[in-house]
Each structure stands twice: as C-alpha cells, then as structure tokens.
Length: 193
Image (tube, rainbow, N blue to C red; front, top):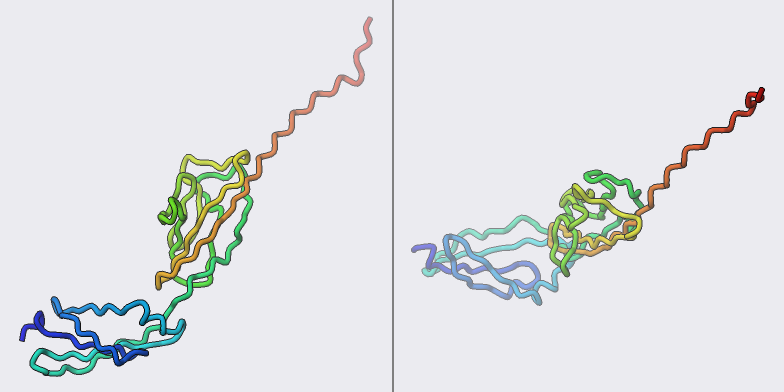
C-alpha cells in the first residue's frame, strides 16, 4: 500500500520502551515528538540507541531499524577565558584583542545584545562564530574615558546548550608624548667687546 497512508509504529528502546508512538508517515518520513518530561530520565553523558519497528496497515512488518549510538548532552559549555582584560586605547580596528575559550569543541560564539538576541557583532566589536576571536569593527575605537566596556557573550554547544559570560574590557589611555626638551643656553657666551 501507499507509504503515505501507512502507520509507523515506533518504540524508543531507551528508558521508556513501553510507550509506542503511532505517528502518520508523510513523504516516507515521520517525526516522533517525545514530551520533555519523558526525556528528563535520560542521563547526561550516557549512550543510547533509538529503535523503530515499522509495519503497514495490513500488518506486514519491516526489518527493525536501530540508530547508531548517540550520547545525551544536557550541560552547557563553560567559558574558561578571563572575564576582564586590559587593552590600549591605541588598539586598531580589525586586530584580534581577545579570544574566548571554552571547555568543549564545536562551540558557536555570539555577542548577547537586546536581551538575548544573539548576534555576531554589536556597534563596536565583532566575534567570529567558530574561532571566537574578537576584533574592533572598522572605524571604531575604545576610549579610556568611557572604560570599562562590557560585552555579554553567549557560547552554544552542538546540542544547543548555552551559557552566558560577560567580558569586561578596561582601556588604558595612551601616555602623553614627552615634550621636546628646551635647548640649553650657550654655556660659554661670547664676551661682549
């Protein structure tokens, strides 16, 4: 019969195999929604597999399909870089002034602005999503008189877990150039005739 009209009988052989879902198949695909409460029993760092039993409306059973093993990740990455740094007021735009470090691989990095709207840049700085290198945007500068600056950061791992961190940037003023010394008066003036 047409797969569009068949039913998929899916049992999750994880920790709740007694809960069969019977979603409809559409375009030879089906999505099984598991309530968040049911997923709370999964343990962080533990490996699991997903098993699907498929049969059509006439009761014909297909070979059981088991997914590859997957590991549950419920813990957000930890930002391990300093929370406060100092830069010179002469910092040039485009130059990397800080690299955010985390305790996980594959983390995406963003600046957190507008109450949680994640972007790669704000009006002063930009952060590279993967390398986490922070630079001043072209045509901008950090001023010692407006120091310190705070940049809220978000790091999100491949499982979607996020953590927030604020980087404080202190700006040191450039020292005033030393004045040119006055020339010494002539130590041996010519005697007047």
